Amino acid sequence: MANLVELADIEPSLGTEELHLFDVRWYLDGRSGHRAFLEKHIRSAMFLDLDTCLCDPSTVDPALGRHPLPDPKSFESVLTSFGVSKSQLLVFYDDQAGSIAARAWWMASAIGYQAALLNGGLSAASNSMFESGESPIRSMPRLPYTSSTMSWDPDLVISEPELKALLSQGNAILLDARSKERYLGINETVDPKAGHIPGAVSAFWRQNVDRRNRFKHPNEIAKNFLQLGIGPTTEKEVISSCGSGVTACHNIFTLQYALQLQARLFPPSFSGWCHTLGNEIET
Image (cartoon, rainbow, N blue to C red; front, side, top):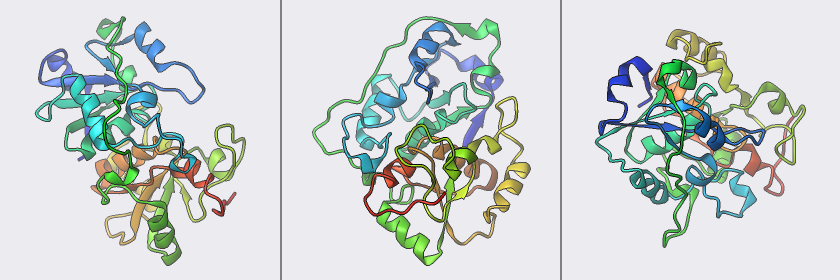
């Protein structure tokens, strides 16, 4: 379930055993999310690093994308290293309207944890709620089993062969959560090729939030997705992608929040697709 919480509602539980608050800041331009955390974060928050906790840094296959999903058991071991249990609420935030934190929400929800996004993220807090300083740094453990994107619930993720089959049959709506410019192949600075997966439609994650980095009203969100052919009576499978499977989770969260619709994640997204020999690219 897409659980969106307000800071005022969870403030009394900050620092208690009822709730764990995670700061998931990360920047595409190379800035350090951990450094930003050390300078200022919401009271009692712990830092969760995208590169070492929300993906498998040991994976060398470029076809799995820039942020390949780790084995779910490995991710669960990261959460338990913070003292987390499934009886507690996990709340994730960033300073980019949840576009990074949604990946943590998706992963935690997918393995049965009570997970939520903080509406407004870092900007929801007043100066009196900020603190600075260290948090234990965790990384993905090396466990005695092989990492695989398909070890996740197949109802929540989709493989490249299955995606191709659904698209060729016209039975899927593939969302691309990247900016319209990157979708069109304009000014691509991250991946070696520019454009998008053939058949994908542009669904920039920023359309889900307002100027204050807060989620729009469900009715407004539903109206936006209806223009892409997604509504209460949609029979096609809805699949979410982006550059590397991170901001794609923002659309998954939003579709659950506003339409109670479960979309599937294509983990490699465009960064994996463009590395597979023979895959076509549209601009």
